[in-house]
Length: 408
Figure 1 (cartoon, rainbow, N blue to C red):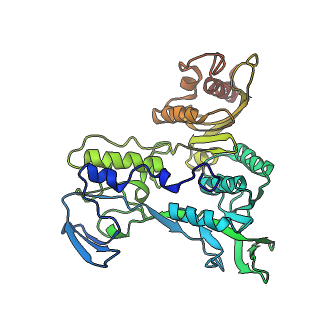
Figure 2: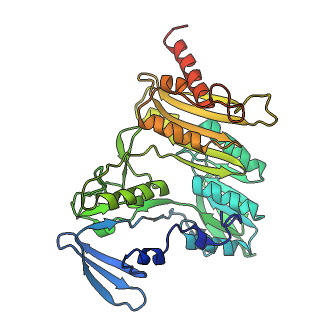
């Protein structure tokens, strides 16, 4: 949003600042790096980054919210100064400044961050090549049909999209540009590269002191408490209960961090409220199109051993007699045996993000396609048809299952 010009001042994206916490009585130690946590002794060793002075402190209860660190891909030449990362606000500012002197930019990574960054660069007048290692964009979030629509939307906005493409090397050209070599023996010349990498939980401070998953994420109970009863955790450093599969999973989302941090504060001295888990509900706005999803994709549902099936629904979101209208695209994933709704994906110039939230609750509550097909929803020609589009996509799934069970 900053690179595209929607947010002028990066400082505006922060939801809190030290001064607000100080007013509430919090003792803040900014620019201090925690070096060591001794869980058995309940002590912390930190260093003042300005004075290099060491600070020893004790705690009764501890909340670890150290977030995640960048997982930098192993590619020859990646240390080139023309290659920048995109994860933190400081890195976003560096990218924005560097892009002012460069026109053709390569973006590596076809997840949310890479796709949104691509849009930002396009809006600021740059020529973009988007590299995605996997065969489709947003592959962790949407299935093929909507992924292809996203790809076309980018291409319609003059982005070169290269899916199924592995970058093998970066090297300087004689005229000061950057050459990108790929495993399929193609070469691309750009001015700079922005990498939107994956992330890893930053849990080293508690290694060997609390239970940690193989991926490095801290394991907590439903009250966000670690295996040490005096230590709680929140955000990108933890796993979360993923309701569609009833498993613990690493899903680094800002929405999770906010909820988990709130639960930590509530449960620190008394168990008050359990985490409800997550459906990994997320969304983005891309060139005027809302893309939103919740729960499992079809491929992920099959990988989780569901007898999964899906329906694709495309229709105007409200009656044709209204003066304006627009298409809405929905993919609904469900389990054929239990008829449970497992996931949904949306794409439209109409605002469909809140529909993803609705289906998130449907998944949370183990509702079926039958429930969704006839659940009470408002009707007004201003907003929808007599049956809301969520009703209609579920009714389409029911119709398909009549054929599946040999019924008519």
